[in-house]
Image 1 (cartoon, one colour):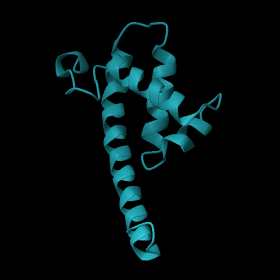
Image 2 (tube, rainbow, N blue to C red; image 1 turned 90 degrees about the vertical axis):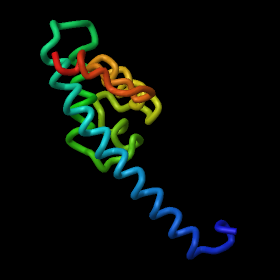
Image 3 (cartoon, rainbow, N blue to C red; image 1 turned 90 degrees about the horizontal axis):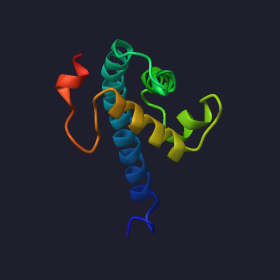
Length: 107
């Protein structure tokens, strides 16, 4: 069992950190594209807040969602930041559950 073997537990934790970091870098790249798409759109109610959340992810690609949420203004939980980030990506033409909407993102 991994839980009973500290060496295996450490290896699993390191693997999780690496996967999380890679996912953050991929998300930062999507955020970069979404910012471009949002900036090309006419002003909307949430656009500036979405751009702020996306730029925060771009500036901190290796940070955990909890860290990103705590360093937002005002601070928020990791769940609130993740939801804001999902909405911002969707507003920029990217839906993490599906493939990016390239037609909307290229506008």
